[in-house]
Image (tube, rainbow, N blue to C red; front, side):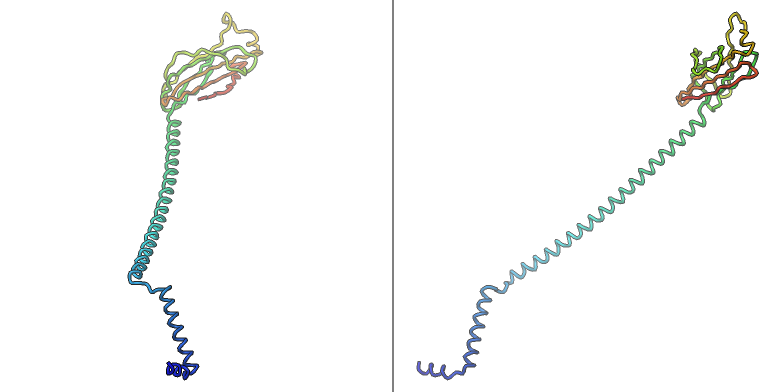
Length: 234
């Protein structure tokens, strides 16, 4: 014992310091191994597997995002094509409807009148179909009456039985005023009172469109016969 104490007492301060540093280093290594142990081989493999799984998950998510974007693009393209198709269909329908309307207008029946004087107070009216197809269910009503001025209201007339008028077969009617005892009143002879001639024609074309043509003439003398107008009404 005396020899050991003697040996220690013979060490220099530097040797003592080095010895303490070595001990301290060993203590630190022990503590680090205790609280921060090196991973085992199993733990290393587990970490690598987790990394691989994360990379695979990221790849799957990336592919899903790309597929979603592609789907959105396809949906937008299909939506635009539907809009273009709807617009094209609408334009096509309008074109077809316009063509059908023009065809009907060009080929349907159009009934009008022509007139001529045949005597001092008798008027001949020719009911003529100016269209390209027959006028069906044609009914005609007419009258002539004494009047002081052009009437503002349409007179009441009786329509005759239905008939048909083709484009090449006009129908003549004769309109004459009815005088009492067939004697022309003096005021008409003097030109103080006139005569109104009124007629109406109703008909149907082959497209089941109903039309009406009206006409009226007024005169205080047949030499000055006034056509008030021809009015066509659907």
